[in-house]
Picture 1 (cartoon, helix red, strand yellow):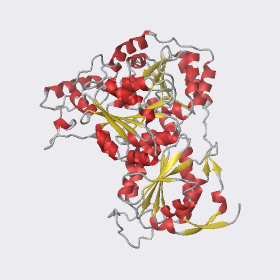
Picture 2 (cartoon, rainbow, N blue to C red):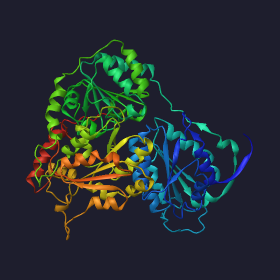
Picture 3 (tube, one colour):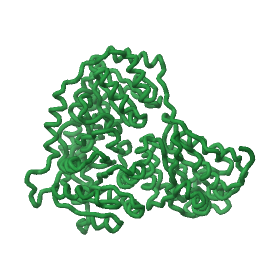
Picture 4 (cartoon, rainbow, N blue to C red):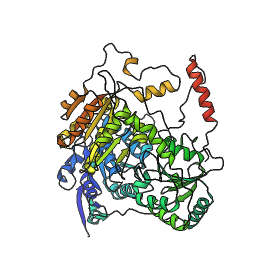
Length: 613
């Protein structure tokens, strides 16, 4: 197509975005989340109204949680599709910085379009403008630079001709994938330019699959053949690459046990003989025992985060080799690893072919049997529930597990439940477990559940959240109610930040400022979470026992829109089995004997830490 078309920059942006397609013919950007203000309502708002049929716009209640919903959507879509989020300048923009960091850590695509100040600077300083006394080119949106994979400031309409293709290249590239920020000066949004018609022709963005280098492949195959006790660490990249079946075939062909990170959990069914389950700080005994003895650790699509590696104290074999099969060179080279830079699916398939009939010695079958004998009683329903007995988080997990169906997907992000779910949840198929634990961001849960349901409407989505997280970010419950998006929220009310209180105690500290009873308040807390959720439009119920929780969960399929079930829980118990060391700075000097003892234990663990590279 030849010629030009005169459009405002905002109109050009929406038209271009709507023309970017997936291989299946859908728009890569499913729609815009938007809260309008003076930095985007006149320009981008008018353009989105005109494009509302082909590029839907949804209104949330907080810029951060709108972006969380978009990120959860992209994660559930295995990065195959994404959403855009726009805000005004100033606080609307900075509200999205936390979400940008979350997407960056988790390597997830989201298009952030915050409004920016006037490019022509005539009315400076405008309302909400942050002035840098030493740099006139800086605005508050420069906060996005360290937490996005691509940042651009649109200060002239024609800059979209280069900025937009670059943005989509990043969001669709498996190695560089992450959040993009196009900081859009508000006057420029409304300025017109004669754009080439060809710029708006539909374009299909293909998901690149990188094949392994022959030399790297040969070296890794040789290392695996030489290993006596190899183990696989499956990360989120297994899911993003659609490599769950390839992982199963590889593990079975070569007899190598598999462990799962938070992002990798559900890559294999929980009862697969070679799936040793969760690894690391929130891991179980089967995985951690084998990893401690492994002489070769093959990471597949993992960042080797400190929770996975026990702060690099878990892999204790003196001669162990670390191999990283990862699509990103940055991750493939971490901690002195032997790299195999490749798409997870193709990498496993070609590595399997290179290994031929080679098989390792399978781990003892008793490891898993002993583990479940220890933890299954923790999730069982109480035999007799006293009137004053508080449920444990483990019992809540068990109740939800018993209520789960073949369509159930559980999700969470921060607090106590990520650890309990990683250890205890029995994921029976890929994609049935959605955990944001790269950034461990409180406030992701409710918005994330909404985004998951938008991505996969047929799923029975159950969101675990604590009272602390609920108070921090609950507003998208109202959005879900207004949009008729149904999912279940289980609020475990332990009256504060229970997991951090346990960490405080575990490092020798006195209980202070975590649970509400250990904070300075004139009026004791008496929050009615069920009533609050109902006021936002959800159907809600407060239950008094695990048995009542199970009855309430059984009714969830009868409810339209979001359904909230609240249960009081005990903030102190947690699964005592499994786990490994996690480095948290313990004071060298303290008046408390408990802190001094914790410091001694810290020093012992620190001496075993290995962090090459």
